[in-house]
Image 1 (tube, rainbow, N blue to C red):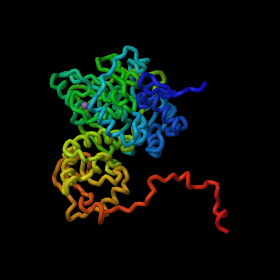
Image 2 (cartoon, rainbow, N blue to C red):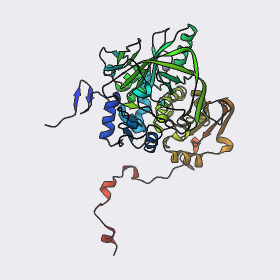
Image 3 (cartoon, helix red, strand yellow):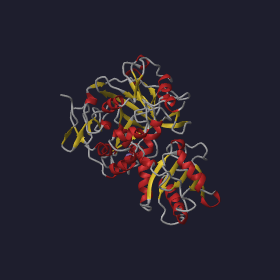
Image 4 (cartoon, rainbow, N blue to C red):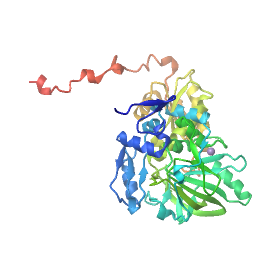
Length: 476
Ligand SMILES: [Mn+2]
């Protein structure tokens, strides 16, 4: 008898998968990618410097890549595992058009983690770690200043509240047990600042080979003392299993591939970079934080995940949580806003398209201002009507070309805060541009009545095309 789709309680169980959602663990997800012909297995022994990145980058957004024994290392490397919106939606089991709302819902209702004593990620322990010996850490872009850990979830605990925080930061390997880490001025850095003031190091864990749900949740723009691992649990619809680290009281995902246990060192800074960033330019820091690694734990035959700097995987992981936050923020004042999209050409950070059904003339300009207020990185906003697909750049450009006049529909705000990583700004200070590409309400059904072919939306092509017919059957 063949295997059947079954259910356990109200949770659908997929054949061949251990958990409810394929994005619940990296291994389930790789099996899913392979089953859907989204995974390319590369020949063994490609070079860790540049060659691996060249292959993964060429297939970026088309196939995830699996590299056995790269550079002769015994551990395999994967990349590009969440490099398509549709894949990310599949990972958490929702339709692509529901993805942003699903993330919004998970962020609003996190699910507490479930601690377990015996975890796959602690099957083996390396007590005397040597990062480049123990892990296949690639070099990606031309001017990157050495091997970088790019898909490491850094977990720390707020000593004041006892609640954990998760983030992804770029981490350059600078010694057998040393890492230079670029912390951004958010939660990890705030907890580190407090630890340093008290003269203490801050325990951290770096999780490599995390699940799609964990990777995505780590990028949530959540308030302080929201544990992003609980958002990962909400995304997969069941409490995330976590286990206590061997050398600290931090809790890490039990099903992760590899965990580096260590400390952010108080009072220590070191230069780090350049490193190829999401902007498609290099970034360097004169004074990054320093991490010392005390131990490595891992699964049997662990898999190492790397994110190529500037790839779609890099862009999309930040994109979807950001869209969820921006949508929530704008909808608080404008419930008639129906969708938002951060476009890949705008590095999924700087250019926003907003879809809405205006209730009053002029309202799209208020929405432009609300979008700028929602995140300071946003530099350009295009507002379109509900007949325009915000993910289709041709449709959006069409709306601008036929519904926008710069003399009356353009909003400019100069000398505002933007992204410091945008090299066209003056250390982050620059201009904002908003384009109202919506139709005046009174003219929707007259000058702006859009052409349409009756029946086209319901057409069944298979029913009307004859695959066996040849031109010669009909033309003498
Ligand atoms: Mn946080």
